[in-house]
Image (cartoon, rainbow, N blue to C red; front, side):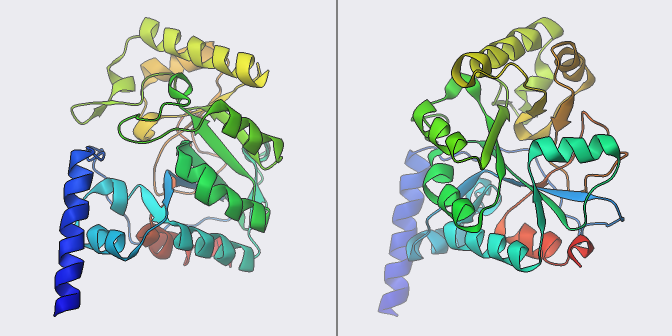
Length: 285
C-alpha cells in the first residue's frame, strides 16, 4: 500500500511538473488500423520523434496520462533498442532516404525494406537514439526545423545544436532534410503549413534551403517531411517550384511504386504502433 501511495504521489508530482512545463498536448487526431496492408515490392517508413529515458515514475505517468507527446510521439530508449534489434534479427534491409528515392523511381524495392526517419531533431535523438543506431549500424534520416536549430525551448522541447547535427552527419549514418523553416505549429487543430499562401510557403522554403546550403554545403535538398504529416496542393506546388520533388506524410501505409511522390507515407512509431503494425508486417517474412 505504501509503495502504491508513493507511486501515485510521484505520478502526481510529475503531472504537475509536466503541466507547468506546458508539455505539448495538441496534435491532430489519428486512427490506428489493426494491421499494415502488405503488397509485394514495397518498403515501410518508420517515423520517430522522441526517444526518452523513462524511470518508474515516468512510466506510471505515461500509463495514467492521455498526453499524446508521451503515448504517441515518444518511445522509451529501451523500447527503441528492442525495436531496432527486432528488425536486425528479421534481416531488415535498412535503406537511406537517397536509396529509398532511387528504389521508388525504379519501381523496385528490395525485400524486407525498412527506412528509419526522425522529425524535429530534439536532444533525445542525439542522446538516446543515435548511440543505438551506431551500435546496430542502422542509417537514418533526420528532418530538421531549420529556423529553430539550437532552440532550447521550442514548445518545451530542446532541439539539437548545429554542432551535434554535424557530429551525427560525420558518422556517415545520418542524412538530413527539411521539416520547414518555421511552420512547425498548429493553428487550432490545423497544421500551420495548410493555412499559408504560396508566397508565404515560398519564403519559408527558400529560408530552409538556404540553411542547408550555408550549414551543410548542400544545395540539393529534394525532400520534405510535413509538420504533423500534413500538406496540401498549394504547398506541394511551391515545393516543386523549388526543386523539392518528394514529400513525406504520416500514414499507416507501405511505400509503394504508385505512392504519390508528394504524399509518401511513413508510419508514426509508438511502442504500441510498433507491436501492432510492424512486428506482424508481412514484408519482413
